[in-house]
Length: 479
Image (cartoon, rainbow, N blue to C red; front, side, top):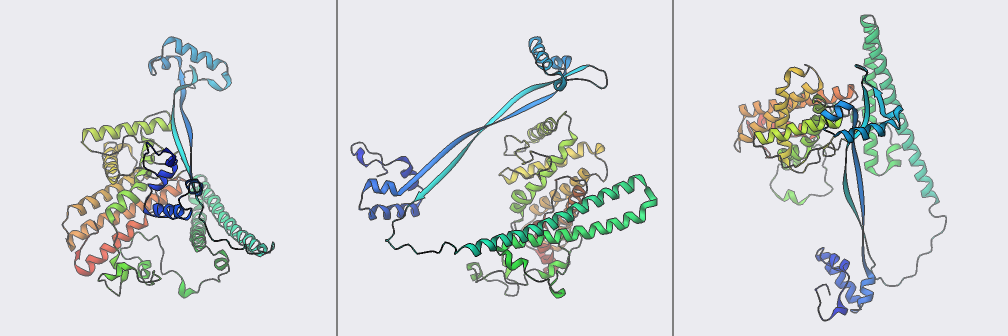
């Protein structure tokens, strides 16, 4: 039926049926069963299997605007006299909003649209229904009030969750107000308020600790899909409390690590465990792909934040202009150094950073893009090292990227087995990255910047490798 027909055109089916048929063996078998059920009746068969595709076009306009004087329109933008006069005439229609006087030389400046670009996206919504023929059975009789208790339970559960979230938000608001008070004391009172500042910072640390604990608990509750059971649970015993903080990036043997793999995570033995493994440490069989985990995972998140942070150092009147200047330097560097980034354009949309309040995340699909971006970032930071303040967030981010690049490059040069002394040197770079990345996350949080999150997966891989060569004297990396 789905093959092209020249003579028996009465057997031709709609294109949507052919699309459904080409999806795979499961769809083919299902459609064959439906056709047999209808005894080859084409009309009933088509009525049973329906596929509808709806397409909508969306155009997003982006305007590049700015304040320009008449001379700047001619010199910087290269506009003709007629276009300049037209722009001035347009602005004179609304002088209150479109005309201003420069605060330095009182020259009139006009708010003009330099360029208007757009991109067209096509959203495809596929709605697929397949009506399966079943034997006729009498519909069960359901009382109209049968679900009243379920509805009441849901309302109770939602109310408990809302109270929990409001309390969590109140803790965060208190921390913000206390930090503002500490800043005011430090700026206006100096040494006289040293004791008060220390006490307030101690309270802030306790409140933030409680806030993080509540956030973890709420996440677990949502994952459990059983709010009533979770919120009715009594407080944990002291013996069941965590053995250590989960954000210890300084120690080579954090206390929480002793709790790893102490509970069996499997309901039944997986097929993977048919292979030989250590029965005392089942999860040692499941390794981590460190290189893909960085280049297509944590590294994309880290480098997206690094790009957003670094863009502020480039010339330009707007955030978009500074970002474009940085990207132009990146592609020129790739050309000069024969680096293939496997990406044709790099915009704020590429790192999902439309607003400064959004946490950037890399949107590229090649691991080598992360690697080339990190190499360029290190090179560009070195060129403007004198303008990067010591102790600034960008300086700490540069140190983190530098150590991660050394860690990966040295690890990649080694053979299958790495001697303990070399493994120690390589691991030091990895642990330095964890240290600097944790500093980045804390400093960005203190400066109210949505940048640079904590990367726990990389820490787990480093600790696993570190424990291996400490115990055996050799390391088998997960490349």
